[in-house]
Length: 208
Image (cartoon, rainbow, N blue to C red; front, side, top):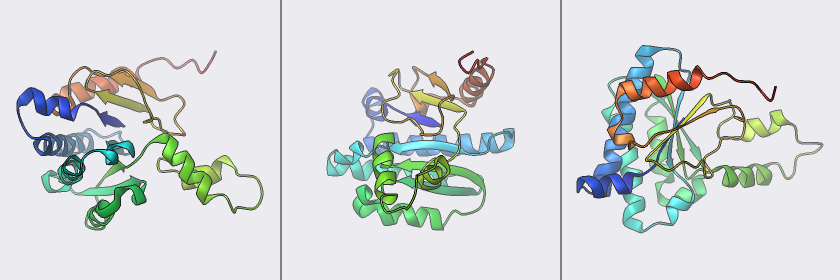
């Protein structure tokens, strides 16, 4: 799972528009999908596109990250099976835009885009959906309603900020955290491989 933080700072550093910055994220994501597909051993790549709070930004900024990020299929050199997870109500006029991306990309390397997503909002939506369920709510019930039902092994955040914020998957208490100073747009395939290898080679003690 990758959290590509810092696109506004990257745009300012390079003197380009925000749309160009998000477009660069889409291009890099497409490159990573092709690389991971050839590399093997990765069941799915998750990328955080935007939190629910990001949809509170200016109309132009919201338009830029919705249009820029969603170009990933256009730039991909391999077929993609895209899932979009998050709060579709919060996406507003862009909800159908993301649904169309999913409809047009159903077979290939699995890419899950987290749009209008954050852990606290997901918990709220799960509670709302399960409010009328009879009997106790089990972990299996919650997982069935979750945007990320499977455990994430490696969580990578770019851009220099060393905090998880609300970007923590519910069912991944033992995921390995990797914080990178480089911006996502500047990462190389070697950077990605090194991050995955270093994280997966860490020794897990599980409280022992």
